[in-house]
Length: 453
Image 1 (cartoon, rainbow, N blue to C red):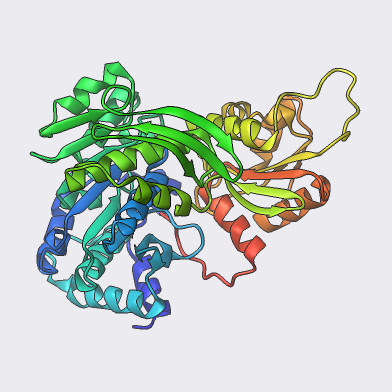
Image 2 (spheres, one colour):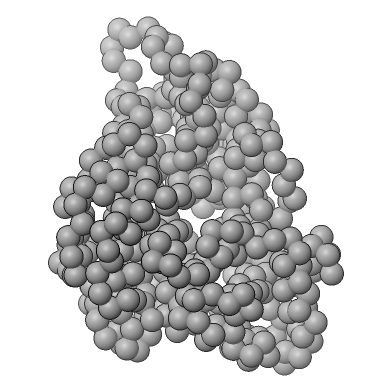
């Protein structure tokens, strides 16, 4: 199959986005993924795996971890989700995304053996992509695979791998329709990636959740605030300047080329995971190199300067709160308009916001600090689960924020840029779907439409 045919075959399989849009929930079946791996020759065991989950920050942490491994001279495969623009982004070796030819080839190989699965075991879209990642990493081959959980952990397709090191960045309320109504329920699902004898790097600091993770069979638990920490975390031009304490060392004055105080926490988790993998501290110069080189597209990403356009895929209240803090600290977006201030006076601040259904738009906008915006441009996320843009605009009006509705992300972006002017600022947020579409519009890339899952 060529890539178009391979993606068409892939999209004929059950997809989480379609399931949730239809309000039907699939019963998790790890046996199906195990059966597929058995047919493919257990490629998930070909190389050591470092496994990451968390409500927020797991993609950034995965990219930080892979960058440290590459700086150490290893060939690192990364499997992340969702993609922003092209499905190829999910599979990368040393940050080079899988080529169209290779993706078509690996998917064709899986399609050729799908019929060998037991009757009734039809894999899902995400299971097939996960299988493709493990098989491609085995074929390259890579020295180590950095694998991000798609959703939750215990029942996730990626959990067929045995992570030597497991990372949990944090636990928040998201995907409660699948993972459970409380943070304790969600923690139990995420703790499911911890394998016997492994090392767990736990970025979640809530002491009430610690025992949930400690009850798993990890040989060692390294806990944020106790065993490692970010001891200084200051704004710098182009990112952060941080001091880090790990079980093995102290790293001072490290420039991290990512915006947002929360990214220092993600880098700390990645650094501790790398130390655990190698069994020793990482050389200072390699930590400095990795921190300066790391990139995390769609996460507080600056796309232009005039106006300043920032993309941030905050998709829940915790993420929105972190986004608002970053805007205030690093980009000067702070406070609500003061009494007597002339509307539009000074640099204009415009938000482009689209969300998925199931989110409370009022809570999200409050967390984002939308009251300080001169205009909010609401749009529908390009997803079957898109929340109506009119609902977002209505929530903005209740908060006293002037709002308009645009039918697409591209039109919303054009409206926002025109409103902001050369000296203003535009924030695109609310969903990685919206961020991905905005990124495509800004870069002018010709990107095929595929489900993100």
